[in-house]
Amino acid sequence: MTIEIKWTDTDPETGQRRFLCAEKWAGAWRFKWKLQRRGNWTKDLEPTRAMWEHVLDSLRRRYRRREGVSDEDVEQVERLLKDWREPPSAEEDN
Image 1 (tube, rainbow, N blue to C red):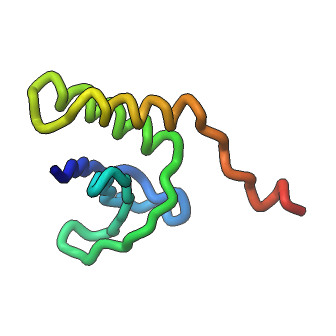
Image 2 (cartoon, rainbow, N blue to C red):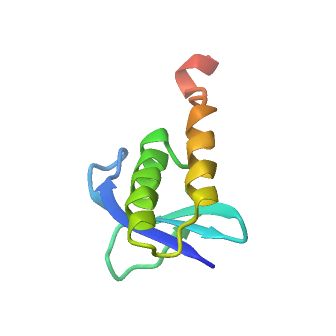
Image 3 (cartoon, rainbow, N blue to C red):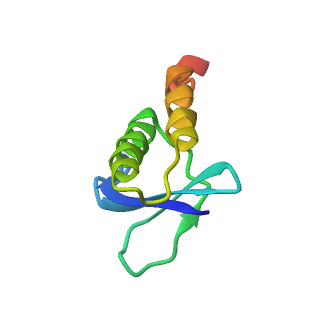
């Protein structure tokens, strides 16, 4: 079963509103984004910790309403957040 979570945030590069989507298909999470409501999705967005926290919150709320979310889905994202390491920034590489 596919799980899809959609929300909006602010693009850190442009400051514009950005539409986000986290999708779980075949056990793997994929993130995508677009700048216009009716635009095309840009795939392979590297998720931030804040994005994963939003996904976890959404999964917990959906689980209570029985919308196809299992304990394993919630536990998978909780483990990912527990083991989260911030990616090195470009400034640290220099």
